[in-house]
Image 1: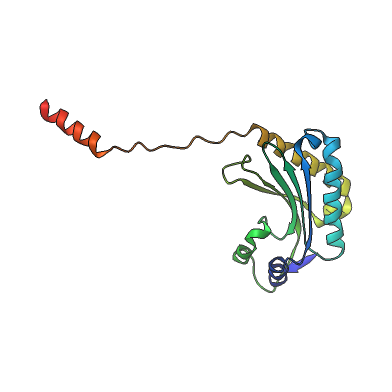
Image 2: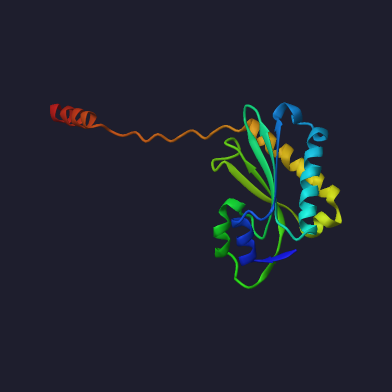
Amino acid sequence: MKINLEDLNNKIENQDYIQDLETVKYGDISKSKSKIKPYAEKMIKEVAAAFKHDSLVQTQLAVTGQRPVTFALETNIINLPYSNYKKIVNFFEEGQEYPLNVYFETRSDYVNVSHFRIDQLATEEEVEKDADKVVDQLVEAIIEKLTVVREYEAPEKKTAKKETKKSKTAKKEIKKKK
């Protein structure tokens, strides 16, 4: 499926796309490929259906627990989430059609400093040609990101040492005494 910039922006702005949200507890999927796979299969099935019906899609898997994380698949012409759709115009020209790709998004306070990561997962052709392979890629990507979230340590905040008036005055007095 190809889409022009105006149609893409209109569909995203009007939320004219297939949307799905599944919520699962971390303990229900843990690090098990076999437990994650049914969710990945459902997400890829929704993406394939969207391509078949010339529609956009946003399908999400929210994992609850001590370190919550939301995984999403979105079809788009660029690796920007739908929430930043207004910025897409900066990268493409009006009047041309662009192919859609499938992007894998990870949102969590424990993924990186920006709390967000987006990667291209597949093209439309790859989904149509071998959906099972794309499902396996998604399972691997989810496991990888769950590991990142589980092992994430926030960077230490840099604290600038500010001298107070009192300490500056004290230093001046020490110098005067010498």
